Image (tube, rainbow, N blue to C red; front, side, top):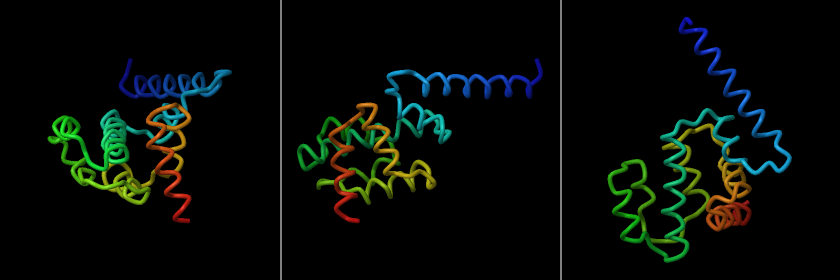
Length: 134
């Protein structure tokens, strides 16, 4: 099989998996669908999830916990979130645009995470902040 044929096959499989995910009766995979729709890499997805962990600390404790700091201290992209105050929607939006992908709709991203039950409290906090600023 030639390289182009392999690529075509892979793209077909991705479309097929996406169709299966989105057609499930009890669709609960909004974030996975978001990842596929926006061609996010594993690294970008990991950054988003790690960022939410940092923001969770900041919401719950008003600061980044030492364990979180030590887990993520070697990840340069996350440094801008390592501050000790409540996060904001704008701060998260800036992080997404600068470190993940400038074309991502941050509100849609948060809603997809929330619907898939990933860091729901953080998503609700940031979406509420977004709503209050508009």
